[in-house]
Length: 202
Image (cartoon, rainbow, N blue to C red; front, side, top):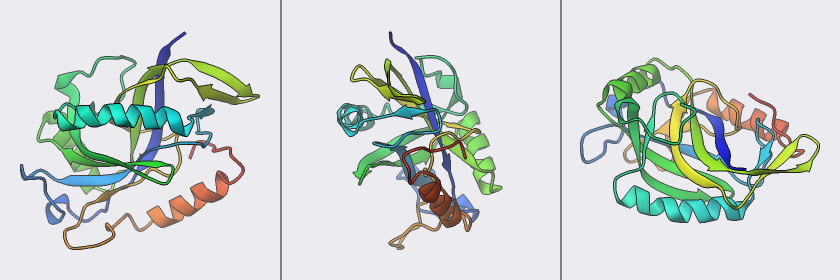
């Protein structure tokens, strides 16, 4: 039976003012980072095979191109994106190894302005996938997401559950984005904690 599946990972942006970063053609700030991971048990005890994300990312590319890849600030238990709560839109999405990466534009909406203020004040936020799908028990404590999974969107939230997703302010002219000074430590801790295939909530 299909159910709403929510997975969240920390999303760290440089404390440097967003006004100093690379802008979208609209003039709105851009951030980028990890949106999801494949082939790893996450903090919710769920495991996403690579082919599941492959299928959904291919499909979601059309949503990005059609300028419809919006997400909310905070995570409703709903399959509908509430436009009054939209804070951002995904402009690019791609693979980096087993990580789904994304470049997101923060919109000048009420929720977008709140998100921008949180990031400017160095508040740690999470990026959270929302989708519909069924689960099958692989072994004790691990549920595998099945191939009926359908990605709905990515939201920004306060509570992390999926390790390693840190968003960075996109800086013009720099090969690597400037990140939170603690993000490297967090990433290393995530890699250590997840080395055995289990990832506690961090």
